[in-house]
Amino acid sequence: MYNLISALSRRQKSYVFLAADLALLPLALLFTLQVQPLPDPALATLLSLMPVLPYVLAAAAGMALWLGLPHVQLNAYERHAAVQSALLAGGTALALALLTALFGPALPPGTHVVFAICYFLSMVVARAAMLQLVLMIYRRANPRCRVLIYGAGNTGTQLAQALKAHDGIDPVAFADDNSSLQGLTLVGLPVFSPARIAEIVQARQIRRVLLAMPSQSQPRQAQITQRLQQLGLEVQALPSFAQLIGEEALVDKLTPVAPQAFLGRAARDVPLKEAAGSYQGKSVLVSGAGGSIGSELCRQVLACRPAKLVLFELSELALYTVHQELGPLAEAAGIELVPVLGSVTDPRQVRMVLNRHGVQVLLHAAAYKHVPLVEANPLPGLANNVFGTQTLARAAARAGVERFILISSDKAVNPANVMGASKRLAELIVQDLATRPGQKHGQKTVFTMVRFGNVLGSSGSVVPLFQEQISRGGPVTVTDPNVKRFFMTISEAVQLVLQAGDMAQGGEVFVLDMGAPVPILQLARQVIESAGHSVRDADNPDGDIAIEIIGLRPGEKMEEELTLTEELVHTRHQKIFCARETVLSEIEVAGFLRSLRQAVAAGDEAAARRVIQRWVEGYCQPPEAGRKSS
Image 1 (cartoon, rainbow, N blue to C red):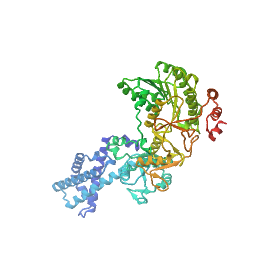
Image 2: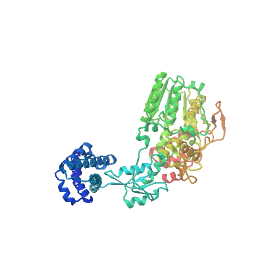
Image 3: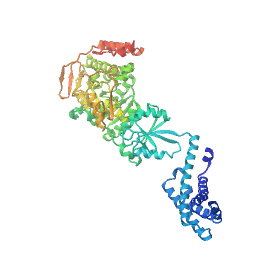
Image 4: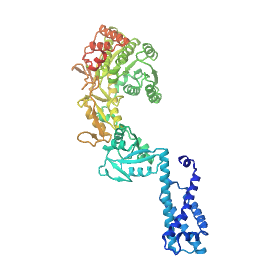
């Protein structure tokens, strides 16, 4: 039967509907004659009407085709089609009245009115019965997908009504958070509490949930989606009104609040002024040029109008991105922009680049800096951060580079992780090269380093992470309720780095004034509220986004520090200090480099951690790392 129905063309289906309507005509007439008080029996009266009945059928067929009633599909038979059926019934009754008045037998006027009503009702009932029959056949041949509609408001009820005529979807029930709707029956479907979804799904064999709540916020919809997916359900959301009317482009333009808005203080603009002279007209190389810090260094160095800017980057995509951004600016300013794809751990390439481009100022920002990743991969982190710095710094000294500025981190102070320890070892290498006897006479390279804390908006920083978690509906994850971090904007940090590079004499550890440390829990609340959402906690259980405390990850500290000593020397810039810290001798630096290189070459993480513990002041190996190494 299913194959037979499926094989019928649209025109053939129209013929079937027309034949059904014409077949109903004599039946409706017989029923009318039966219920009317006529002198003769109903069947005898119908036989007496046989001469005019073919003409009535022909008139009915013509009117049906003229009205287009046979072309109306069963699942589209609604108010307009019902009006067409009423017109057909009325027109047929009128044709019968005229023919019987002319050719007999005469019938009372009321009989024609009752006939019109009976014929109309028979067409409506017949179509409803045929629809249910066809649906039953389709369901048996193609089992329908049973769905739960989440949201029993106007959108949900309209969706349920539309789906009832759908060939492949069977709406079973509603779920709604509104307690006043729970327990009601809307458009023939019961409304349940969301707490009973697991029970309903199992009892009614539901496979899919349709979210009919486009007015709800995206985080709220994401939370519901995640909860339903955990039950093994397929979840689909009804488009918002903005999507339906084509205004989604406007919605897409809404962007998260800029990270600097969460600084907790006014961002400081530090014009370079005379400091720009250290970079103007020079050949400047920025390692890690495609990173967050590196790309901002490139932008601000470009504003100092160097003769040449060399972009040294390991990541092809990052190098392409920064080169595409800066290319037009460099061309307009008449500055040569050179993209170099390579690694700072490659001595041959580093020497070639420094000599070919006559590099005079080198800003070393290339590093693996994500604490958990480096903690999980200590040997590549040490090789890149320590040996890369050694390779670049030694090549800079041999090539006669005027200034070498290492971008360091507050995590290098009393580090609790391999990333911080690697940055501290890089500092020791640069300090050693700054104090070499050969560096004190004749043409020498000024080696210096700048240490600062977290940068808002950089890759891997907490604000973009929080904003991404909010877009997914949360929760926002915080490691510990008491954890604090120093923060500075990328622009601030880079301006101060370039200022420090200008005032460097050699061997200094410059420390930037980061202000007071910011509680991360407070920052998470600010980011959630700035996105227009409320925090869901014990005081506000109906809030949008929850904050989840996940515990400190391996290598993380409650608070970071900026110096190994409290002895800070003021510089001519009020936001830049110089820390007086002890340095290792040339022999000691050579010793730890040799031991570390052997550990990395042997793939021995335990040996590498022992080298760090021996030479990095304040390093405390996490217990997990100790167990892993053993």
